[in-house]
Image 1 (cartoon, rainbow, N blue to C red):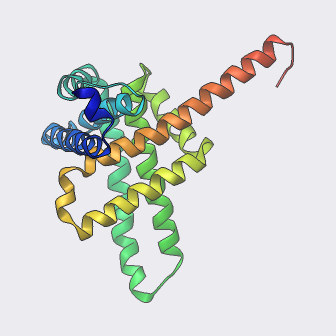
Image 2 (image 1 turned 45 degrees about the vertical axis):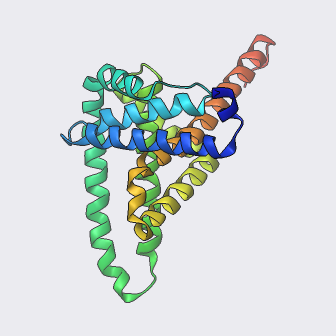
Image 3 (image 1 turned 180 degrees about the horizontal axis):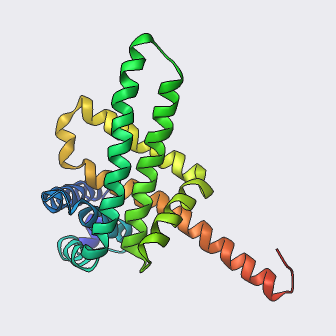
Amino acid sequence: MEKQYDDNLFFKLIYTLSDMAILSILWLIGCLPILTIGASTTALLYVAGKKVGGKEPKIVSDFIKSYKENFVQSLWITLVLGILWFSSTTYFMMGLSSLKDGFNLSLIIMILVAFEVIMISIYMCALLAKYELKTFTIIKNSFLFTHAYFLESIKAFGVIVSMLFCLLMVPGLVIILPGAIALIASYFVRQSILKFLERQEILKELNEEGLDF
């Protein structure tokens, strides 16, 4: 019966939507104390990453597992993200007043700031979910991945912003939006990591052949 459903596009869609809804609810509950936003987002991306990787995660148990395992380190990540988001929000509020005079450089800067904050935040939580790294290394690698694999970052940012605009038009989408964003983000993060690993493998082979790059 399960295989029959797997071959049916309609049931695949229903399963995916239900998974996104469950993930979204878990994420919202996990974020309630505010200080646990980092832990909740990390757990969200952990489950989404497994799903994008072709595995079939046990959504609730895997979410709780990641939440507990990364809880302490995620507090430092939350602190960094809090400073990042507070600073960018402050700038946005100042920039919005200047937009009343029409299109100007402030709009471009605001878009760039939004891109940096969103993508660095996603990479930080995704790397924490996937690897055991020191906090400083996670922060550094998040910045590097955002810019070294710029095309993937731009695609992810574009899709995420489009989904947020859809939320403004259909507020009811909030029930699946966090899960949907996590799946999209995990897909592009996975592409970046695979390219990085492929590049590292090529460099290793070249070094073994005595070629210095």
